[in-house]
Image (cartoon, rainbow, N blue to C red; front, side, top):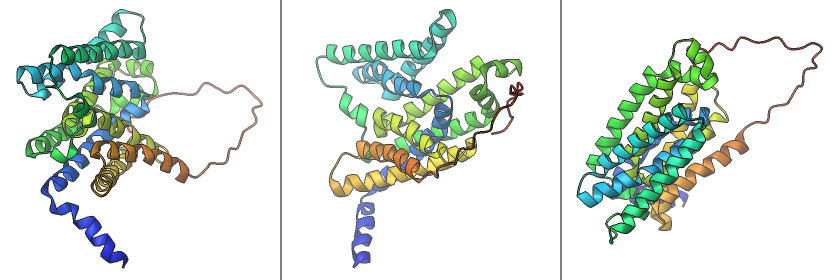
Length: 297
């Protein structure tokens, strides 16, 4: 009885070619976002991912209105955001969060102004936010795959600077790891993940996959590689569960995947085994510890 229900439940959607492409494209995007998002979570830069995801709206709007590929406009907007954040924080006393917030609001307002000025709905803001994962085509699959390969290369080359930067920016500077360049590289990798994924899964879903799976994985894994691996698995599971829920419950696919990813954090926190606290009495002042950054996480 159970088998007669499960078999069509799992196989019927797969008979549609667009559903299979959605599974593949969503899974590639989940791995891409989980790997890049691991460093976003570890460095506490969640606002950066949100800002980049929505700050690309002006470039996309202009590209669509001019008949250009949306990816081109998204790339320009992301570059403006990245350079703008570094410029504001370097030449002023503003913090990273303040600079990101100012540019985020400015870019989002500019994008909405461009859409309203066009006098039409040539740019579908709702589709941009929630995506259309079921409309993924071969071109989008190649784009996400290429972005994943590029991000994997960047993460491998920048592993040591990112690790040092996550512990202590001053220590990274003394080690000659150029923290400013490492920060800019991380912003660039986040931009790559957002640009490659937003067309198919929407900026809302990009943010969810960028933060939720790595956050859930960090509750039970301590190494960077472990968080990336488990986060990728959680992201893929979120895509699969969300797509099947969308198919059988007749709900939007993008929000279903995003909601599943967010729920994974709650599930991970419940499954996390509580650790007994053992306070150690201090009879003397603690000695200053050596905070040298490990070469490998």
